[in-house]
Image 1 (cartoon, helix red, strand yellow):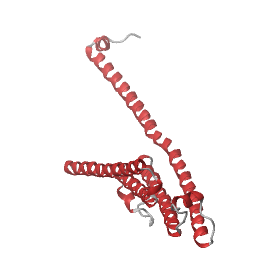
Image 2 (tube, one colour):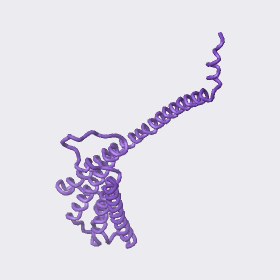
Image 3 (cartoon, helix red, strand yellow):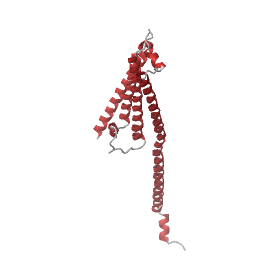
Image 4 (cartoon, helix red, strand yellow):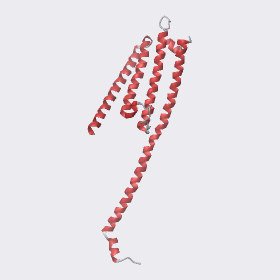
Amino acid sequence: MGISERAQRFLDSPNFCRYNLAAYRCIMNGSKTKYKQTFGSFIFLSRWLQAPLYCGLIIAQAVYVYRFLIELWHLIGFSLLNHEPPAALREAVTDTAGHVSMDMLVMLSVLGLIDVVMIANLLIMVIVGGYETFVSRLNLANHPDQPEWLSHVNAGVLKVKLATALIGISSIHLLKTFISVDRFQFDTVMWQVTIHVVFLGSAVALAWIDRLTFREAGIKH
């Protein structure tokens, strides 16, 4: 059955071509949008590749707990049970006459414990803050044990807190060096002081940049 002359004129008209072109564009745009959404979802899911990294840091946290318990047992042993202190610790506090100061032994041991605790705190900030910022929400809004800093954590705040924690760790190491400074070369002590000053400057710079960013965001809003 042939088509009517009117229908034939419509098929040959420019309007029919425009309708076909519009329909083709609509189909292609829909396909492109669906492809972009699928690819975007795949990229967004890639953030879960970081989850094993945070699990590894949790294992490192357990290792530090084990090291803390060992150091604590050493402290109890030589301070209360008359055990021999570790050779490295004993050597660090032995003066030129061969005398060992028990006070210095206890002080260095306590500083070592504080050092382990501060590194463990650094790990907690990286694990909890990093996971919350880069992987997924922890949904701790009404949890009684939610850390105070977690409610306003972002990449900038996390970097400043990490820099502050590194300054604390560096301070402990520097204090341990100063306690037995006669056993270190001058260049070694100066390098430790220089690194500590660099940490301080980096923390100040990060805090200043974060403040500028926060101020600019507040002005825009």
